Image (cartoon, rainbow, N blue to C red; front, side):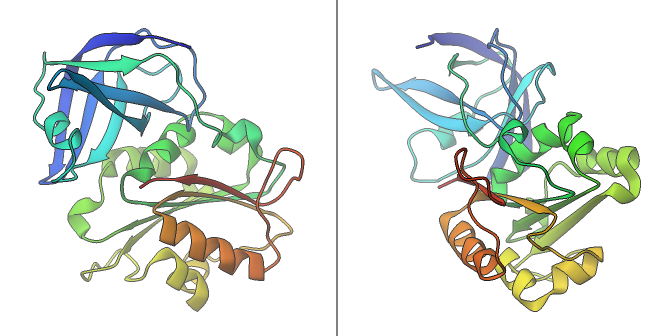
Length: 247
């Protein structure tokens, strides 16, 4: 069941005009990397809440969410205006099925995110689980503009810690960037550019793929992967693809 907790903002990070992170301390129950929590505010006498994945790893404090501002939305513009010391509400029922514990055996872990869906993958990669399970980890992050590539310091730390076992592939679709592919995830897989970039083939024999982000990306990448012989992973039917949708 859980309950609502009133907590205060410990830190606010403004990545760009429409992209923010909030950090807060809250006595949340133990959770698994990749899970999400409901965050809300009281607006016009009603509690308005939305699910946000936790960016911090289990055991890491403060808790952290990563979100984009939806200008016409009731909640995100108000969350973006919060300052250190302001209050918000967090529900204690942390949940979600996109976790490493639910994945079958694999040698190569492929993580594909659009926008703020990067958050749960960072939570996972800061734990030992992916590195105990996989020989190589590829993280593809698709955004529209270079300024949307947040958490560069966290990614640099992962690169330093794991060396050749970790490949971060930024995909920037609306402007040129010398360090990024200028394609969406689905296009980069169709062309083969992403696999050539990391010198690794994505194949059903040794891969597990986790998709988190907008519905179009997930639908199109799933179809492409299924054409290669990969299938959706379910508890009773082990497969190769785990999905979490962000809207």
